[in-house]
Image (cartoon, rainbow, N blue to C red; front, side, top):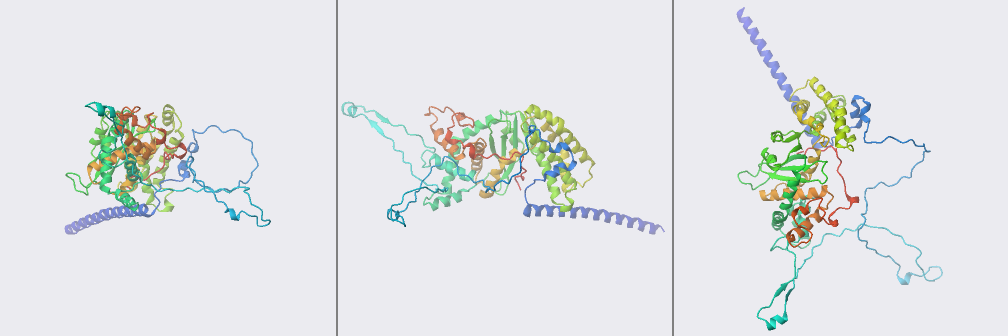
Length: 537
């Protein structure tokens, strides 16, 4: 009997262990299924994270569709309905101010005869059409010839003859044959148009110019060290004078870095001003790793708010830097949880409800966009804060598996709560760190083309070039013209009568010539709250 009881206890124990193991395997299988679905969606599905506007109205609240930025409607007389003539919709425009080349198409003199009476024909009108003619870049040799003067009389009558030389501008690289425009062109092609140097080498070769990628690389690094780094340092000093910044980072591979294998990860950090700044500054900073000491060192002297993602390194910054979390990252995790669900189950899912909460907060921020920081802060306290509290109360009521995508979204939102709520501390703060993600995306796009940096020196030079080019774009400057102007004026700063220091090259300086600016009609502004994929995706 005792043996039978022991056998029964062992059997029950075995069954319990099997049940526990089965449940554990089921969770693992579910996790793998989620990962496969998410991977397939990233590979074959659309990358947009936009949701239907009806999703925001999930809670059936009248406030969801209100807009504080709109004025009261005016009473107008109802006009009779009419059908508007259909026109061709196009976004293509021929820019104003371009040189016009006129080609006249006339009949030969012998054909200007009337086919009826034989009298001479005369012009009664003209038909005109316009074409945009693209002239490929051409290369010319600029030969500087400096005249040297002497006095004939002194030469004949005196034992000393004075020699006077005409002024000649200093080159951007002493001993080199690169002009400011050449280096600016190579830089904008690589760092703005994402064209690696080996492709530019091939393009030069097609035009009969044998210019090696090594020479171009040397030019970029030398010009950067001599003339761009002082401007970069001035921008860095101005950046730290602001009270609201954004930060982000992404990986970069550097092949020849001391003490590290070629396959190891290095990082490109980004720091930039927020929307409250009159003149935007965007700075990249290359570092061999992701340690928190790098933003701490870069932002030495700064005191204020820093928008960042959930990386723990930012949370170790000094107390005078207040980290503000990113609601776009919260939303993105709920979007990932939604993607793995079947289509018919998505609208009523908890993932969709989490997205709806985030969308309501973003919609309010659009409505607050035209308010002053003081009024924006009041409206956030009145309208946004109750939604945030309701959102976290709803999260507490959920019972989800911690290793599922929904569980990870819930955990991220809960663990980051104190950082996420901080955007309601000051009206100058923003609800997301999308501003930094938009600024780091040009580097990510370029990285897909040139893949890696060869040396740390090249990586540092890349950081400076990206900084000046992206800052120029953000301030309505033409990057090519901006770099050409710097490379022309900086070597001759001591001779210049109008420029006194590298601070004169800063965006917002009154010394920047008009030709450097992009005409306002051609400028494009990024969508403020566009949903964007993370830079690693």
